[in-house]
Length: 450
Image 1 (cartoon, rainbow, N blue to C red):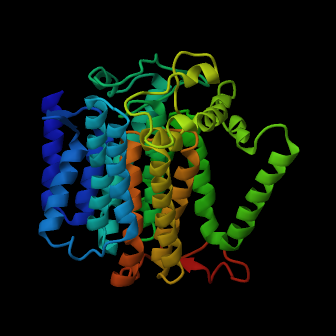
Image 2: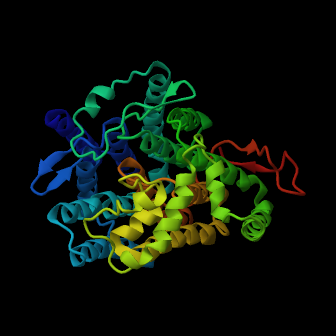
Image 3: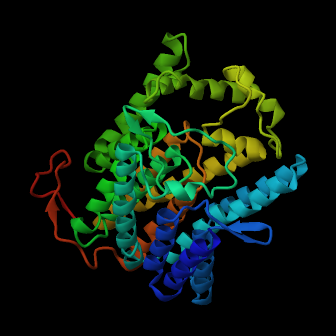
């Protein structure tokens, strides 16, 4: 599949060169969503996907245009680069083989490069608005195909999956509730569900800069349908939290009581129950018969911390954990924080958590003084990151979900500055009454941009 992948990469690169930065980044995302990211071109030691190539072209264009000099370095920028570099160094110290080292170097394209290109491409309201059309078109197509796959057990992507050459698992198609778990253009139903959840969250956030609800709402609806078609617990948790947190924009006074209540509930369950509070994960799953695996994985990871806390496991995968969890001969690490920790040790985990915290802090800080439409964007991005951070306790982020996560992080750092520097109310959408007015505010008076 080298020729089709090369054609997609060329088309996406042309868009990256000729279109305005925000729309150009949207085209990069289209190449990520509509063409399987696991189909790659061999280039020396690296395996380059279409979005990697297009993102490199767009990054070069933005640097030549001087956007790098217009961007003030931030602590989070350094942490993103440091986390990637440390993973490589830690793996080398831990005795990782060449295959693992090449993989970690290549992962920089999916993390550092994608974060950086979002950081440089999205510096104005127009740039953010340029994302809407490509995301909507991709979501409608991919979400529709996902639903079709779940219902009919057929998808045009199924023939392409036969060319996936570096997948370590080989599982037969799985059915739940009488429907096939759709995997769309990704390698696994969980990846597809998380991808569609992130796309839906991005579109919901971008409604703050949209000129009309019709430009983003169909895409958000189809993306949510695609996430549901994956029939996966992790994406279901992410979608539920995304919608719940996004709705808090209209009742912000509930945020602090909700946080305090959740903390109090966790303490109560820890003290009053013979199980840990995180065992609630067992009840938040579509398949309760195997969902206990997630909480047991956390316990085993903590009990074996002495094996990997400094440099990770190198190129070894801790398959001996399988015997400690459920007596199987291998381990399926369905927790992104554990994956980060076994890759580069505790220092890598701390850097990753710090990146999430700093991005969320930027959203909160700028939200207080941003124009109304920018507040919708900032709050939506924050809600999506919270949903991702929570769902990552039960899923690992690879491929499209990982790339989209770092694009989200890069866009969060820029959104607040773009709001203040360009003014997101310069082209407001028609004001509409808010369906959930704040206390003491009338329904008529609670207006905001679509």
